[in-house]
Image 1 (cartoon, rainbow, N blue to C red):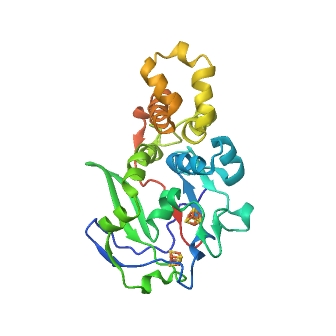
Image 2 (image 1 turned 180 degrees about the vertical axis):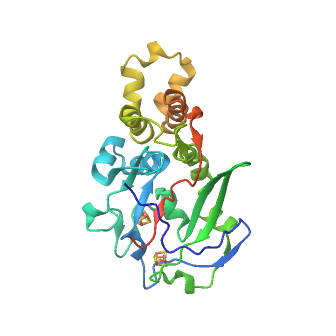
Length: 261
Ligand code: SF4
Ligand code: SF4
């Protein structure tokens, strides 16, 4: 189980207009220190981008760089970067040149040192922000000024937020009795669809899936060609197959980066 405690967080809820000073660059004495001793939860879109960047299959990515875990509340499977296998460091960090997958780095790496929380309220999904101030991080001593809004734009976060929103909402669900959303079979289906897109594509096109479900030709073309379209299709399929719309939504979504582990 992953412990989702948020670590060294500042207990102040920030809005898009909140200001902070921060700058990270290769000249800081702590360069790359935040790329180890931490838990990074990989969202389905993170895995999609990373495996495209590396030019490997989703199964290959999961085998080489990831570990399967279980969300402590919904019981749904999660994937974390397997740093243990790489001496406690992210497999993609290098001491001088830093992140080797920078343009496709995971959502939590983009936000850091800002954390993002999601809470279900009566009005719907409430997304908010907070600072993560770890002692080793010297970026807080630098002078560049941001608002959460300009930081998000600079880090290219809109697309990631959009692609991750449905997954996050799924993680907030509980069965009507308050327990896990589904059983082992359902969890394995969720894992394949959300995280192992190549396997899901084979499942759609090589099993009896298309005999059981009517999928328009135009949609079949798109999900054959595009991982992004396949992921969107898969998330909708999961909601239906696991009856997720019947499950309650409560609590906080997983914080995708845990500080100071
Ligand atoms: S993906 Fe890049 S930014 Fe994120 S922990 Fe790894 S090396 Fe650091
Ligand atoms: S610890 Fe902070 S300042 Fe240092 S490399 Fe990481 S984000 Fe940048």
